[in-house]
Image 1 (cartoon, rainbow, N blue to C red):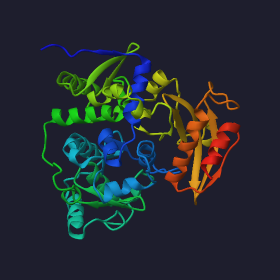
Image 2: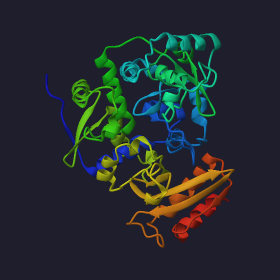
Image 3: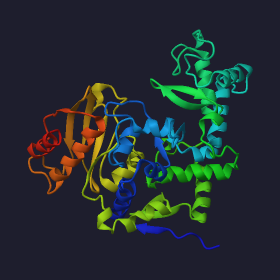
Image 4: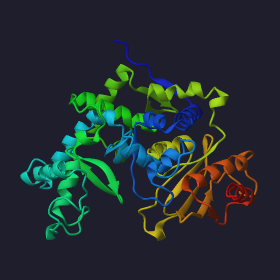
Length: 403
């Protein structure tokens, strides 16, 4: 068998691939299929992470639309991928390695998902239907669990273990809390629950991670990969995916990346002017799949991004929840913002060093205005508070957008 060819891309082509792969405008269902997985995070100063990911790609997206897609239309279900994520229900079969890995991990902590008390919780859900942790199990606190991440109630630890291991799923959320139900009552008809081989499931998890990112370095940080197998096993699975054509290995300026045939095809789309997003401004989520491999982003885009949300305030350089600003194929700024009661307050705005606020690059102010208008519409904001440091042209673009 002939070894798969290792393709070479210039950094400019790699940037073009990423922008055209990620940001071709498309309906919500198409974007969900394109990404395959969207990381979930509940922090929501300007919408949750799924909101921000989708508003950058779906014209007319409004904050919270993902919840209807997940909990009414079942285009997405809560699961585990890079971290807590939203995945397509048709891919539930590929979660099996995660489920087994979590079951073992919980057992090492003294929580057995096959124990009578765990089975009793599943039976309670079966009888009563979708229920939150406030309605299930023993509500008494266990002194031994005080200070733990999941709180002092043993029943809550059991429910999380049952969710992690696939015995329960999220039917919907109530004020952010999972309402648990049985998988057969959450997954839409036709979603496969049949077991696949470990290699088949792991290959799908590896390919899906690359699919979401568009381009992903094998050498990216462990947190970017976060798979239920050692790195050597991942490499073996990836080699199998490359041999079958499910993944493609690229050399970009001496660095190895993996991509998918669908993402590579975006380079052909980049030659079609009507489909070009190359001069548009977009505001990205801190956990956007394009931003997962921050080392890769720094290499390709010369944009050094750090998410400082968990740093003490005195140690932050940029702010609490900082949103990257992409203009065409370059990052031009980042800002920290909050939206409350219809008012978007931009707390700080930081231009990149190659941008002169007093005289913006040609076309940037004109591209910023429609992006700002769409962002205000996505948030449902009718009022705007701007910071210093924007520069006159950018300030006017935001002000015109808010009229």
